[in-house]
Figure 1 (cartoon, rainbow, N blue to C red):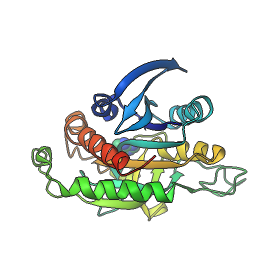
Figure 2: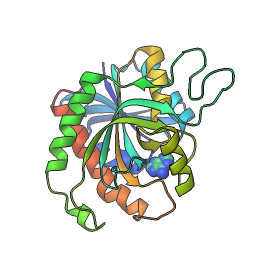
Figure 3: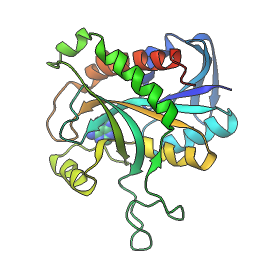
Figure 4: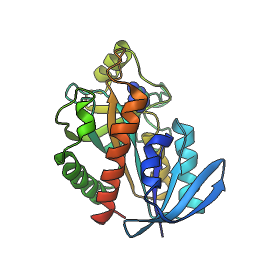
Length: 246
Ligand code: ADE
């Protein structure tokens, strides 16, 4: 059985694709699946596309058609909590869809008929991922300095997802007020977590903070993606695989 590594953007996956041994490509559901071996493990690397539907469809495909034993989602996110800055890395403990609201029929954020708004990631695998993050962040990363960033930090906790790129101070403040323990916001993780929960498939989610989800353009996003986030993804995923994340 294989481990799936999923990202929403090509730059987030490209650095890992270069390391894939015995690569083989399959097309399915409009997606290109790259099968092969990475750090001694059978893997499938795939771009989900952006947003919750794309993430959910990809998770269902990977689990039901490819029988993957677990999924690791890697990519970038906007920082929400005050101490989560650009260049930091977040490992999710749980995920929630911040734009899901079937009230008054169901409580805000609750996935109807499940009784749940928060979906947990796999604790043992997340611990392995976290130790890989700590190891990689402890090394020096010259690219950070070119963005005016110094030491970056690791965080663990709640990530929230929605079908919106959060890019105004008002919206990120509203999210912070509504969900004070949310560390970061992105557009896929919670959808993937819901599908993984339906199928009983273990999930881990890794996000490098690319922006503060407000109206300030802190960094050149495409360059940050290529030079920092893609390298973090590659180094952390390869380290986690070597540490036995399966
Ligand atoms: N991914 C990276 N930054 C994001 C943001 N500000 N909002 C949603 N998804 C993101």
